[in-house]
Image (tube, rainbow, N blue to C red; front, top):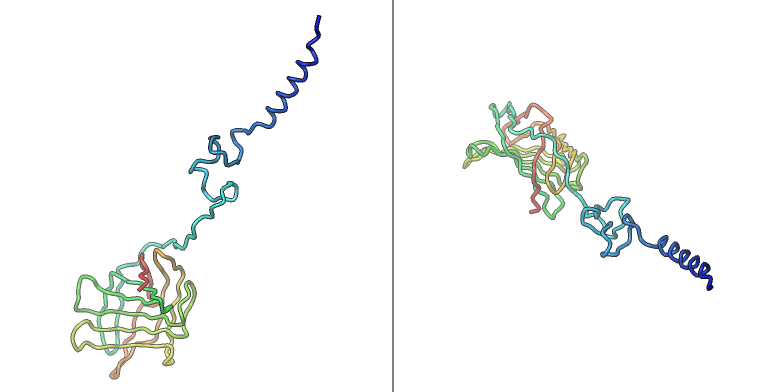
Length: 199
């Protein structure tokens, strides 16, 4: 009688080796035939996954609740309350930050404008080359301004800046024209916009 016990033992050992080398359901290979980590759900660019594509840069900012509308009391050469319900933020290629405060409900009122020309580089405090303008929106309307380059204290503080908006605040000495000065209060005056234009 032939003894096959040695052959069966060798075959069993070979099967055990092959089973140990087979990929498991949770491995991290790139074999698309295995339904393991090749799904879009696993491609989250986290530290523990296995893909090679970096996550896109996220330059958005978490905006606080909007402070708009705001009212600013003017006193001195102009005495009234200015109302603003919109702030437009622009960051053109000349590396400035430009802020424009308007009352969208009334074209014949005040516009407040702020320029950071330091140059502007994102979050931070700016007081080296900053200007504030207050303009009456009608023909022959008055124009008041204050500028840090003229020795007035003007500072813009940007607490958050991203592709989806900006927020912070600014303070300024009285803005002046040739005949007098206007004090703006209360201060600091908030900065808040949910879009930043690039031109």
